[in-house]
Length: 456
Image 1: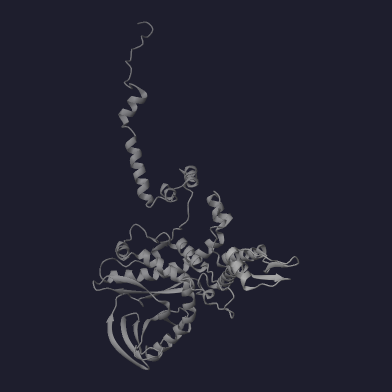
Image 2: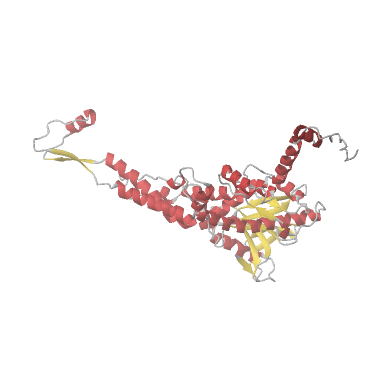
């Protein structure tokens, strides 16, 4: 976290410090990015002897870890819930207009890779609020050093290079800075800061949002990079050993081997004129495949254990396990995802507040207290609807029908589903008079015959 004194004013020195702060982490971000993209260190391995085999086998556990974690967290879009008397449709419409679920997924994926991610909220040409994810390597939020750590500035920069100059240093930076009231664009060249544009925004706060993967700002596969490298190394050397076994040195004992015999061996795959005491054999090293495979499996287990990402191809996930049994197997994974969810929800509420303030200023909706909004995450996990239906049957009459209907994976709107079910049930019931006639016969009172009294 980049912190400055609360009274600090924006100037060229502060922007340069922010850029330097980002550059210090650039090497780490670049490594995480290339590992997700499949450019692992094994691909750059070199051997001093060119004769030796140098296969480079890569198993991309990094991509597997990130894709599984992100898909489980946001495979289903986030649902925003409020009380019936609160209207948030303008915000949801703004989200739908830009397919916010795709933006959320991209942000969550890069959070899983880098450990954090930034989003910029702005108003487009039609004065509609929009969101855009920003590269974490070129973006920073500056917080104050108070106990609240409030946002002071959001900074996004882009280096501009001169193609005619052979240097790795940029000629200048294009910098976008936003505070709680304005968005300002600068050109930073050396110590000179030149303002190019300035305009007000109506989001009520710094329109930059930081998304955190966890408290340590570490990526999901970052703690197991050394294990991933070890796994790739073992698999590569196993292939090397196999090739070297095929290309093993042929040794001749008690005999000479001339050019004619070499040609005969290459052409006919046979040898002749071998002396009685001669011997021919390949010079190979003994490969204990069992020990190597045990080591490979141990490393793979450690990768999944430390990253808390389950191995879906493992035998533990084979078979028709019940929903409860499956959740026990995913317990550590669920705990890790729940931690990601807490940090992600906090940032989603920051974004929601920015949209809400902007749309209320535009008189499109009333201001909504953020504590009245709940972001609901739905796990992207196979469900056992048979077990769920049995549970619903057992709880019918004890628990509200809408709550029970919401437990089914294929029900999107529980209230609507229950209303339709009740309507169909009422239609299937006959009218009262028809019901009585069909079931109780003629209910007309019988003719009353007076009973004569004694003496009549």
